[in-house]
Structures are given as C-alpha cells and as structure tokens.
Image (tube, rainbow, N blue to C red; front, side):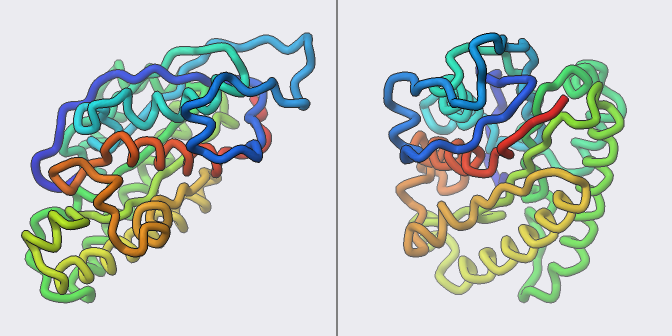
Length: 269
C-alpha cells in the first residue's frame, strides 16, 4: 500500500478444513507467544487435519519483508496452530503495488494464482489502497468516484474468487485498512495533521465499501482501523514499520489477532 511497496514472500500458515475454531478467551498477544493451547472442545479425538492451504491475495500488507518477522499470515497461522496442533501450507500470491485491476488480471490470466485459489482452504484478501495512491484530491468528495470504482472492482474480485474455488463454502476474509496512505509520526512529519485527517476519512470511506461488498458476497470483513487507530488513541506509530506505511512485527501481530477475532465459529466444506 502507498509508495515504496515491498516484494511479497511466502508465509507458512495453519488451517483446519472441516471447522474453524471459536476465538478463545486468552488475549491475542498471549496466543502469539505462548505454548500451544488445548484443542477446542468442538473437536473430537477422531478428528484429523485436512491439509489445504490458506491463500493470501492482495498487496504488500501481506509481506513479511517490512516487519523483520514472519508476517501477519504466519502469525495468524500460529494462533490457529496453537489451538489445533497441526500445520498446513500457505500460498501467498500477493503483489507489491497491487491494485484491484492488477489482482483481477492475476485471477483471470495467471494459472498459478487460479490454481492457488481453486485449492484454497481459506482465502485472505487485502486490496484497494493502491487504487487511490497518487490522486490529487483536495477534499473527501473528490475521492467518492474513485472509491466507488475500487469497491466495484472488489465486487468483481470476490465473484471471480467464488467461481474459482473448488468448494463454495471456502471462507474468505477481507481486510480493511488503517490508512490508505502513510500514518503515525512519519505521516505527521511528512504530510501534516490536516492531510492525515483527510487520509483517514478516505480510509473510512473505502473501508465502508469494502465491508459492505464483502458481506454482500458472503465473506467476512475484518476491521483493521480499530486496532491501529481507535485503540492506539490515533497514533499507530508503534504498529508501523519505519516507512510509516507497512506493519512492523507488532502490527503483524495486531492484524493476525483481528483475523483470529473475525474467524467464523464454524467452517463447513
């Protein structure tokens, strides 16, 4: 997202094909760092793991390169593996600088991406911020049409993803953004308070469209604005890499925790 986007790398994740887990009572940070939790009571002794990957689609928020860590997909995997105890693979087909248009092209034209979605046990999507990068808009009204176009493109992405999946019940989690631009102290220094406020308004406008579109498609919308902005008192610097754009290790943990919190209690295949 934003300028200076980073190349994406593969991240290992853990997933269960037949059922999702209800989020456990322990805090997200404890789940990331502690020993494996007991298996949930909903799983019987006869249950066995089905080795299907979780697939990441979208932009460089998916990348572990900026955080010096395993990345948010791997952190999300650790939350699940701490509860389940058996790993499966992941396929990260996100791209640095990806827009809704380039992701649609991936899904339509690239055999590896199409195959990954087809075999997915779960799909995590974050896309849309780069569609708004570089626009010279002085106020929120100027962003209305570009945001509507981005949301329409996301609708097409979700339809195509649904068509490519081998199983129609494969869950899809769609992440919103904390900011479509840079944020924290870097943004205040480089852009000023007024521009940061406008960028956050644009972000909330886009997030509303992402949430509405995801839910209409039967996907789960995952709120990242609250953990990064609301819960930090409006200063997400501690969750951001030095570029002010991508998540650091703590930010990756926060995203994983948000995914975990939003994970449906059941997953039927």
